[in-house]
Length: 245
Image 1 (cartoon, rainbow, N blue to C red):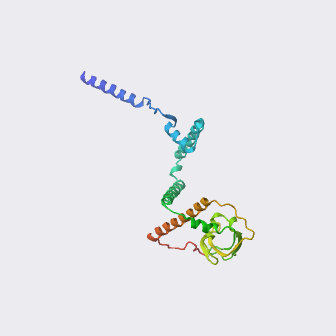
Image 2: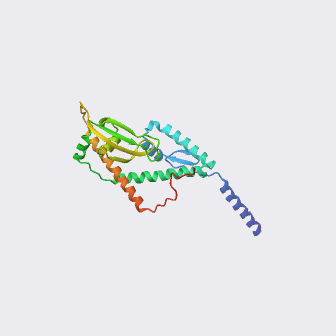
Image 3: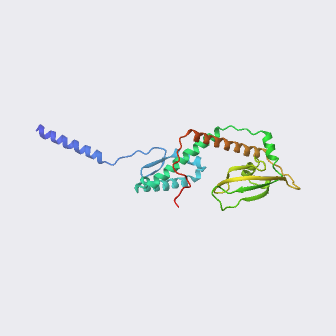
């Protein structure tokens, strides 16, 4: 009798455990959940932060929710198909990661730089206005068939980048690392003469100060990068322009 009772108790216990295991789970949804996509919950805090970041207003919340739903569905489908485990995806992710690291590093280094531009420097730059600059753009290295180009232009009509470069040169001097478009070459200042009948226009000194400060920061960044190169172990096994004929 005791043996039979033991069997009955074991069967009942097994049944209860089985029912508890297969009984539909009553998942508790967090109070501030706005939407759930296949079990992935998005809270009100998530959408508030998204609205603040992207400048949305409360009336656009429905559009934002629909955008998040579509995005999440596409992500989940891509993961289901295993795209996140494919090599092209890993390479693109690695490239994005590295570019983000470089940007954050250079931005922080840029913000750390303290530069000052005095009134004398601004006056020297302003003295270039009203003068015609004759300069020659020399071809980048290796472009033997590309002729040099000479131009004579009023300083006022040049772009800020060319002004900054030419304002530092004296006739006969040249500057390396001049970006001519898609290649890096050289620019040479040939002559500077006053423009006849020149009528000066008002110039914003603070704008000039900002330009000169930016130029100084670029130089400091270049110096910093060159310092990193000098301290690094760099071995070039093959020239970049070498190829089989």
